[in-house]
Length: 172
Image (tube, rainbow, N blue to C red):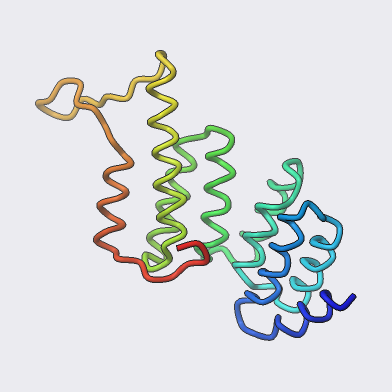
């Protein structure tokens, strides 16, 4: 009870980061029931917190993530944290084109949020690694006048990130 009231009192800031940090503590100790209670309280107090909604998507059971993401997008359709969480869902499902579209949307909405760039870069590295391991995936493209030029999408994301020079993020 003490933690729940502490999380509630910390939740007065606009992005809900106080409660979000407490929720992390419970989730990472595999004590999901208190985390769920704290998350519910935090979302009642800050229902439009992109940070809380994105964490709610990430730490929900897999079968609930799709509906949680739909709810979050309905509440705040242009929040880069929520958009990035949705992109990660598509990435986890190996829906590469959809994941890229959503990651692109996240980094365009807030190029200063380094976490979106980091997740996007990690996704592209994973896709490249999987393409090398799997012989049935073609990692080359045919640009006009070029034949079978290797595509390193992770490098392009990294270069764009460097140009954007993000300065904020929970992980960043």
